[in-house]
Image 1: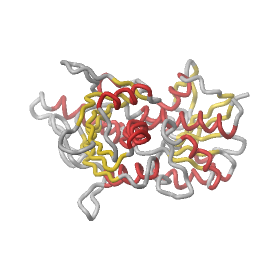
Image 2: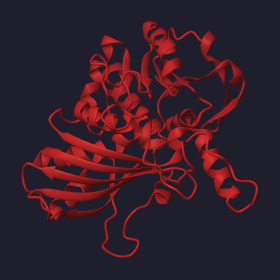
Image 3: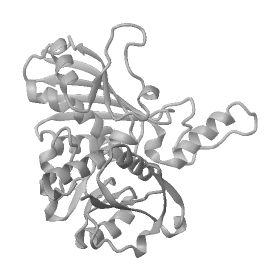
Image 4: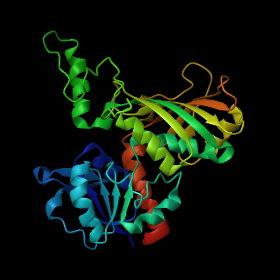
Length: 340
């Protein structure tokens, strides 16, 4: 016996990935519904070898459905997630709306799967920010061994994190660079993204940080350990898919780089590719379509007493969003609903 699953926002980048991953991982589905706004009504999307026609989210009755994977903005989620939850359908939400709600668990299954059991307060589980998700997968096994004091992270985030319009903007600006008179002015981003990097993701806060940087701090504390000190600089780069992070970690205890490498090799969800030679590391292009979080460039930081540097790369549409949501659904099924 399987589950009745709704994917909300099924025509978007993340919604389509959710459908793909549910099929790829053979999630036990008895019935699946692809939901979208009225303007996308009837649009066809793929689920394995099946083609689904999208249904109108505004008219959908969630009664009798087990789970709903939400991949829509916070405004629409605010309207429809409580309706689904009230109808008895567990919401797994990819927006930022519920991440900081103390009554809603924020879950990365490789890190804190037990937190799923706290879903019942609101019938909602939150998916973390894409940049946080891949980072905490790497931090947790190291934290368990040597206890992390402080993290300094710089991110290099792809445009797909901003949606289809951002992908189109990068593509059009890149083409326009080679055709005089066809230059494309920035619309999604405040500055040109083609052949450029922008140290600005989300809105600026009073202290000079951006909200994306604040999210990484708050979410790491909620998912891993509230005592971890973290500072982030988040940068948008002209890459279509795949987020990269340079992470510097300071521990309470000494951790040798070889032991850190061995720990990460054994950790769930991680693939270590770390050869000290040309090309002996993973780049965003190579991680696209993969489930793993890739770790490279593991090395001692000689400037502090107990420090390690590493490079972390992942497909942000997968681990950073759709895959993590499906993994939450799997844990929810195994630990709580127990149907499949």
